[in-house]
View 1 (cartoon, rainbow, N blue to C red):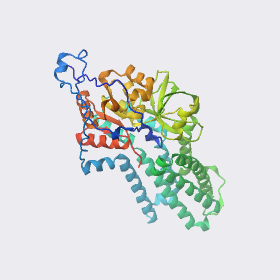
View 2: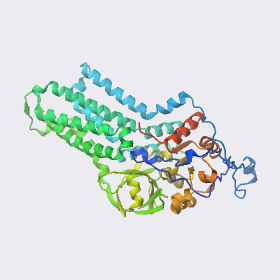
View 3: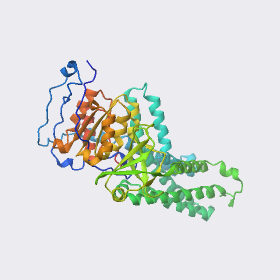
View 4: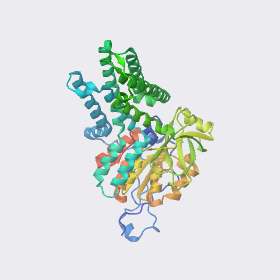
Length: 507
């Protein structure tokens, strides 16, 4: 008898024409149900759609008899979820990191104001730049790829599941450190400027002026990154966060150099370079600049082939293969309006990789209306949480709509991952390229392709996940869906005791 029953819940077609938003890094892993939320919800088939030719009599003996879902069914009442589960999902690792970082820095500011933090009194600039450097690192492609590499190769062969889950949660939610450090750095900067103005009689006017300019630039950059701005005014966020951020970096350099070159005790400028090179502030500024520049150094204009299987989707084909779980940013220009999408590839040795761009905003609409021959992209790709799937022995990747773009590589490149794709009229919407990648690389017993149009509605996803979890012997579930679907599945998995990581929605 085999350890895990064989599954063949395969449909003839593949998922819906949903859309991924591209407001921030994690948006590249989001999908939507398209029209399916308005359809009746059906119970999923039990693990019984089995091809009798592919399983032994011993296998079929442990599988329930086939049960075809009814043609129509009433939507079941929404399951009640305890407040404790909702609170646990709300107060996730992201918010824990953000709370810890901001409270720690707030404590430091209060102690400094009371005269009980001597280091801060003498190194306010270092605390400003140290926080900003940490914020930059937590969003740097190279630094995060290194963290993922250390975690994957360091843990996958020996670590218990609970440790892998904890590390994956940290990797997914380092954005909480980014946000906390950015806000804290801005707060320390205000404190420093107030301190300088208090003693303006002994400070040079140029130091005060550059300090104020730095404050304004940093605060505009921080405010433009607030979730409401990012999600509703993406172009505004990009322009202000990037260009005002660069202005703030330049102003920071001037502020650091002038502030450390002027001797307030003597009221004169120091000419020796050693006094400047020995300061912590300078080296924080150096490393912050390096890590900001690294992704831009890898910027290239690359050829691209665009396939438009339907008005809802554009499939972009690029040269060279990729690891699973990576995401990329593309733009029609070199420095403006970058959008992030999941990458589909058969592996590093493959000659190409793909991005699925669901039509939503002006950028993606233009891909369909006016397909480009080249696009700008950073060759250094960043890792999504799906990249951590290499740590686990067996897992489930469930997605809806264009979320397949972030999920498919994992199931193609690893035989230990099970694919569940929920959508509407997928083959027609996504075309032969994506359909071919699925059918040519993933055997029927390792996937469920749920066409909500043919089945008359979307499944009870939690029940479907539970059945797959038990039959496939999974350790973890990665979810890529819209907010409604993500919340339902995360709450259901938490209540059922299934280890799951959902789409990270910005706070």
